[in-house]
Image (cartoon, rainbow, N blue to C red; front, side, top):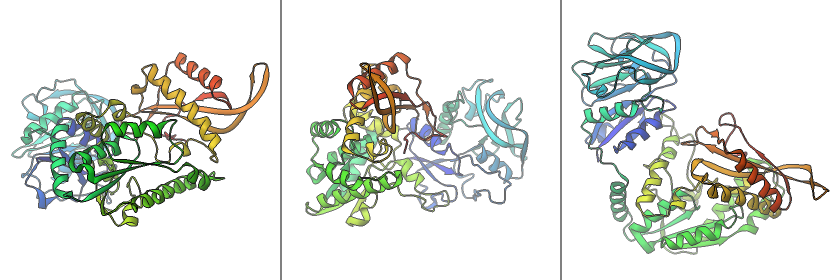
Length: 506
């Protein structure tokens, strides 16, 4: 399979470069800047060098030997990548007179350069750097400038190497996708990476890899584990067994609804009601991290107990996706955190892992799910944390608090759907605060609970902004919750962005 290699020098937008290339139907892989796959170059069509938080002249800057890459593959350096190519070729990179961040416009463009084909002069770009190239090496040629940056883009004469000191991958660069598409054309890329082709090749690989072996998979009701289950089911059918654990912290009716959805998909699912077990283990616990650990360990224990009732299981299926894989390694190749959806299980159960989605971004997972014929409400489901309502109930957890939050959350989510707002936000949910306040109901004094409503817009949850939901909608939700949920007399709306706040409260 053809691919583009993206060398990651530590930029916050490296994953975004990958997503943009994938959106152009071209497969790509992100690897640390010093881990170019020299032993697997047969299908490599081109190389992209990402940005970096460092300056190229810093003693601790990330440095890569490009001698075996330049001249052999088309190369596009972005920001730091462009400066690094120029700097290591004899050019000068120095601190800019003023830091260059935000919108700018290209004032001149070489219309004959293939990287800039079809991109008009005055197109808007996005700058994000404190350094600039002050002089290019002799065989480098400027192909685009701004009012402040002479070498906004350049090409190297005699080889297929380009550099841009702006970020084509970000939304604010108007013709950024066009520029990346031009680079793929320069690479001779087939651009045939589609959900249908992914499904076909993945199912074939799973059949060959798993044979007649049996696989067990933990379902959460979320899109990643659900699409994983459907892919595995398509490959091995009855040899897949799924386990869905109700830890008592799911949304209202979610256990029943999810099981019903999975029946429609033809999956072999075992549903486990473990509510009381989790409530007992969580009794009196208020520390958020301790709650997470108790819920995580409890899930592992329940899953392990049920798995041991089955025979001849050799594989554990997981819904790991590409951002998990990328983030589990630093750019030096050192593991910094584990992203196993059911952390601890591979070691505990001595099973081999099968992760059919490990090459996909979240938006690609959704497109694959649609291609598989899955119901839209499963594919478009908002992210929901593994600890569930356990981290949306601040303080200790009791069955009564769960009941209050489930009822309030159900009204909120139902009205989001009814008003056509559900698909306009990335994630939404209700939070039960450990705060009671005075109210008046029916001429009587009340002293009851406070519910916070949270809704954010995002693309990848790395950053998020609070959703500006209509006032009349918020008024309707507040009125419905206070009138219908026993124990609540006040509703507030969270208008904090991430950062500095997080999406979840715990």
